[in-house]
Image (cartoon, rainbow, N blue to C red; front, side, top):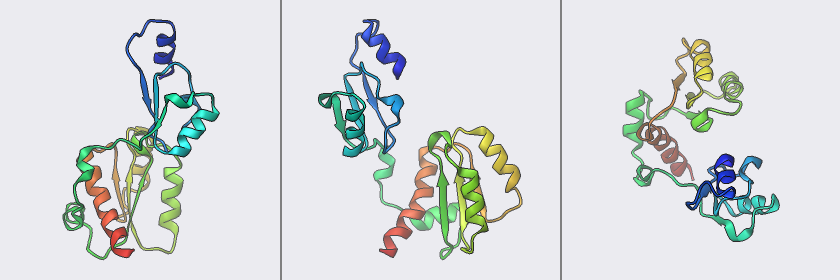
Length: 170
């Protein structure tokens, strides 16, 4: 993104340029001048960008764009059936986004060593090193379902199970 804003400032890029920040709290690398529009997930994110020098007129807090597939109602029974999960089984979904960032491995170990009896679904995204480490570490642990990068349809099924459960509890 920074390279595109620089090209725009030099006149090498003549089209309009927008940056869509898909994190709830924008990282400093998003606050580079030169884009025509910066779309943030929240009003707080827009405030953060403004505090970092981006003109308010170029900020829009519009939420995180999602795949239209996620608008469809959840089908918990089908989602659980596809993954071999029983109806009453507690499930935790652990993911670090498309890049598999964060303390996924440490979190998985902590969740599995706790007293709660839950299945752990881990999505590593494009983080192949993490996926390899976890595959080796949890190869024989039946409590863990491990995925590398997943297509939107698969992620919808993973989330369907959790969203429906959450809605039923409240």
